[in-house]
Amino acid sequence: MSRQRSIEAISTSEYVTIGELVRLTGTRYSTLKFYTQEGFLPFWQPDERLTRRYLRSETVERIAYIKKLRQQGNTIAQVREILNRQQNLQLQPEPLSGEG
Image (tube, rainbow, N blue to C red; front, side, top):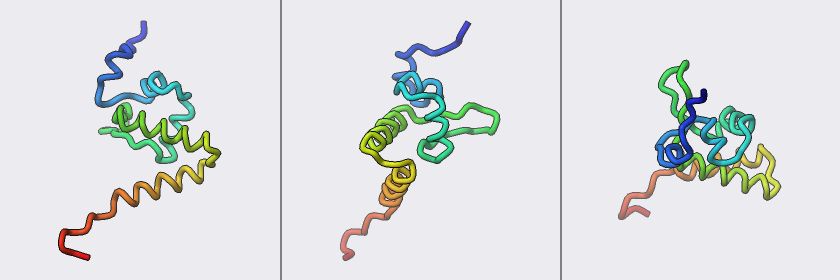
């Protein structure tokens, strides 16, 4: 017998597994695994032998965004570039007041 959590429990959980992301987003497991390997989906894994955990709300939003980019005809390389550019913008320090 499976020990899957209910969709209600998954929908309110802070962290989810890749299998739960499949259920939430309707995206194939192999696709999510590929996105993880490519660095598109950040995860938390306290020990190498433990299951990877993904922040539910941020990851579901990111998967939807990646799907949208792909539907617009972007290649994986273009998606990677877009995500990297956004990451770099988020890492830019905000100017201190009085500067500039």
